[in-house]
Length: 99
Image (cartoon, rainbow, N blue to C red):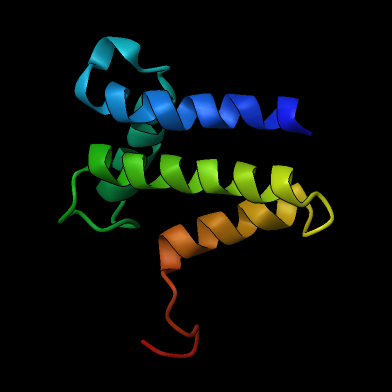
């Protein structure tokens, strides 16, 4: 199990440095930013926060999903964790019946 957590720990350690040094980036955040920008242009995602910043938030949420899954594989399926991640990102933590 420890061997599976090493890539996540590496990502967390290098993630902070990559935020300052663009040459260390994997490209994942750029792909997310592009998708988010398309959502912004379609009026589906808020525009008051830049797509690049939103992609960083979503990227770090993805790291948390990996940590949850690796630390307790029985906790929930990957599909459920990713669904929750996307729902939380798009809709926030507010009760669904509130506006």
